[in-house]
Image (cartoon, rainbow, N blue to C red; front, top):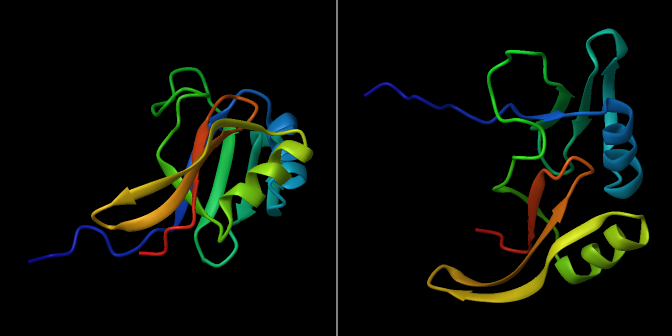
Length: 129
């Protein structure tokens, strides 16, 4: 059988205002911007602990994909989601779902949700498996 997926290179989201998005991902989340292309309104950030990158750009008219503010289900990891959410708030970010303990068949972990300035939501979890 031929593999369909061999890895994860990047996660890409659409944003309305690239400068506002860049400020959020740098100043609130503390991600390292590794590339910015002003002409095409595209920014690339390193995701700590992985070779996967987070890219974002202003969606072109007629471009396929999710509209800005409609992304959800991407999970970032942190050993203490409560502390991370406090820091997100302190830096001016928005937590849309408070950290809560989840007791599931897959194990116990804490999960919270935060949003970028466009409303794209990201899960923050201390789950490791």
